[in-house]
Length: 413
Image (cartoon, rainbow, N blue to C red; front, side, top):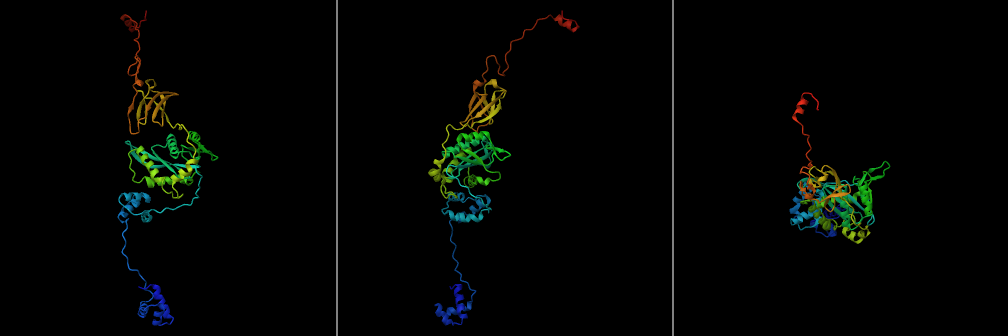
């Protein structure tokens, strides 16, 4: 089979006046072939004979992949790779990624100048919302705390049901323990547990208790400029990575179970992968350089107890997270302070005096009474309903005639 340029060459020589015999000699082909090419004309194209399409190892999984990407919105190829390998796929990652590329929704990118920091200089923190889930028989909001070290991209995450100040601080402490140190600065968005707002001159109005927490651990809090969340992109991108890589297909029974799965994912996936920006493994960068640049942890840990004011019921209990905890009967009807310690204890205080201490029931326990018998033991001169036993009053003995005199309008003699 001759190519199109062969036909054009034959016609070019023929149009110059050369004979078919001369063209055949110049091109080294048979004279009959020259004649045939001239008869077929320049429009004939060379076409390779059709080859049978080779089967791909991905073929049996393509319908499943389409369903996961298009219907379920799972666009992370690493997640899909894990899923189909569990189903028996033995092919490579590149062919899967190429197949998924046209299935993904197109995103419009925006230009942002990347700002890099030195080892140990900065970390970034954010909350990611993961919806509502039924936990311990009650539907609860689920949040993910994420802190990433800006230089090494070492990541820590923790799932919680509350985002109040004490919980935020506890998550920080757990992250510092995971990183084995404290960065010099931490960048946040404008969350109220960190910054209440801004003064008229633009200065940040810090949450006083969080500022005390930051000073205790020796880091400087920073908040990004309003309407510029991209300045905190190193942590907001991991939130998307968590939702795209860790979250799809996850199954858990409660928060401790979920956080155990999250820790395994950090240690075996997130922090040992080659990072897309640095092109290095976060764990290796942290071990080799950044860990030594972090500030040392402070001992003992900051007190992150959850403090509340609660009224004691008439039967001598305070209610904390639906459960009832006893206090001495003398405080019935009074307002006392409760402290939920990070170690799992409930302290009840009257001023500076601790009047009751109980182990906190786990969140799986609801509407249970926790009673110390001594709290409701009454002194001998009191009844069970707390009414004092009073002596009988002395009554003056009078003759009945006096009452008759009063009835007739008379006066007492």
